[in-house]
Length: 355
Image: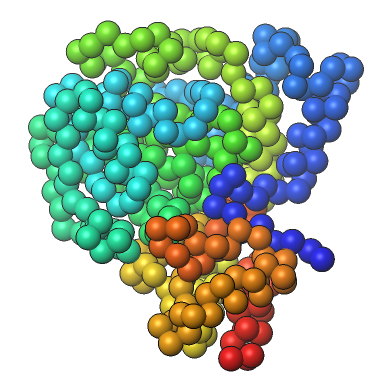
């Protein structure tokens, strides 16, 4: 039976990306050595990093004056590194979910933190509107997509201070006006690569202003100056990212990814809104195109486990919602296919017909 992967992350990758990466793990560039065992300073690996950086800049139209770096680990480390490098006295944070809250917690170790708005009281079911940023804030931090609650900021904000974004779960799913940001960071395991690497796009002249000594490994300037090679980078995840960036380009770039995301979302949200058994959890105007969250309608609430078992038996993988929300979550990152979302919709329709 065919499986359809709706996991929230690590998530689905294009099959050709998996196969190309696996092939290099057996024999990297005909060297007779595995990608997993070569030196990161081998002459054949530097071109991998160089091409990956070039593709990031090409796909997102990164302007001059910005650097692209790859660091080991996930985005959670950046919750600390961002204020370490950018917070001088005061930072502003928009609290739209668990990950935004965790980022805000780390920033409080380095200075004053202002929560400009929060939707926590409504279990993060919407993106706050009509808020303002203190003019003396060193930066505003936003989390563009909220995997747990299924909300998304899908436009680039205009704010009077430096803008920093955690784009872990929607980077490369749409065009981004990079020049509006001083830093963008993203764990790779949603839309870019396998787990183990984080991408940071940083404005060069924004670095070096924080009034503190920064440990060498936690200073973005270290990694900019060394081209992501200060220490041993996560070689295989970076190569996987390269293959995925090539794939995105072949598909037509982030503009094509945006069109596909909207098409998938229209199919799934259309069925959620039509089907008597289900209701969406996020406010309609803030619905994520990456993580489509829904629960059983109140009169069918007792059927939650039954539907999960039914969907699993039909080949749907990873559709169980986060424990803090319950219900279901269809994560539709770049690699998710129209076939996959149609299979989920067929499953939902069949379940409805039985009740």
